[in-house]
Length: 383
Image (cartoon, rainbow, N blue to C red; front, top):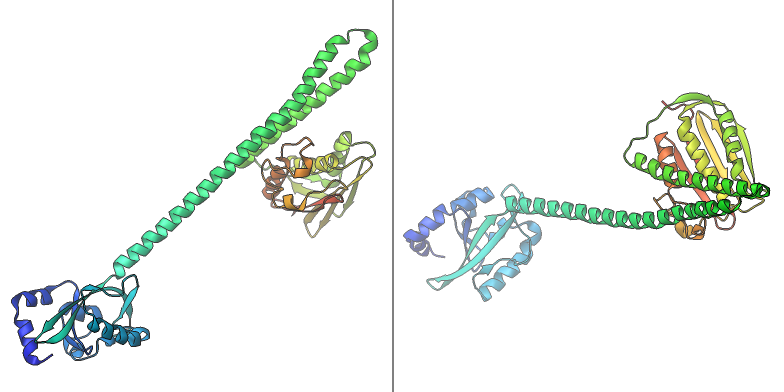
């Protein structure tokens, strides 16, 4: 553009006001790509003085990686000039004098001055708005994730509720039915020679009441564990004697020919919560008995080494199907091969929570038709 043309352009009062005081950067560019005019906002945006820009190729304001392509796009624009946004749908970046790159939006205009094609580029720094957009997108993403997790929790809770209703109704119905039928039969055994039959049904009622109590205890323990209301009462005691008492206590649950074999190695004195340990041991041993057939051994072994208590409960029972093993510690979860055996699906979940409370860890190995071994480790002295 000639000097005369520039003077004519700059002499237009309206143009001058717009050009000088605009809050966006304005560049006037020739068809050859040279910068003909640059307003004060451009100087501020890019860190150049006006004299450093006039006559230079516009590519000086473009990141080096995009300069070659920009020449091609610039030539294409002048072949078919029209007012439009630049790089529609793309993220555009500009380059300051010091090399710093920043995001921009650019709108293009076109006009003729004394038969010379000129393009006007309106350049806006969108760093702040882009940051706000990214922050908004991050918040939306975070909120979406929270909602997704919330929906997943609701789904899990709904499934748990369904399992709870199904299991509770079944588990309560069985002992209640036994109690009612035994009571009805007892009423018919009025003769002295029927005392043995009466005693049999009284024992059956007692057993059913114990089953109901155990179910209720599982529900109450789960509720306490979920709310963090289980208190720890550590005390010193003899673990060998304690384990022996537990093994004797479960002897009344044994099926025909079953036997609990207790082995013990290492120190005998520990400091732990007896009530929690009793619940853990009873649960694992009763499961081993429940899910093992007659004439099978249940191995109950304890070893203390380097202040670590290692407990194994091994059975020769039905085992746990591989597809069920990953969910075994879930609330109300029962493996598909035990649906005909009484149980709430809470025992192992409670055991896991108890083991965590005493700073321990629990694991297991199982093979269907061969048996299962549960391993527990916890500190000898827990403070």
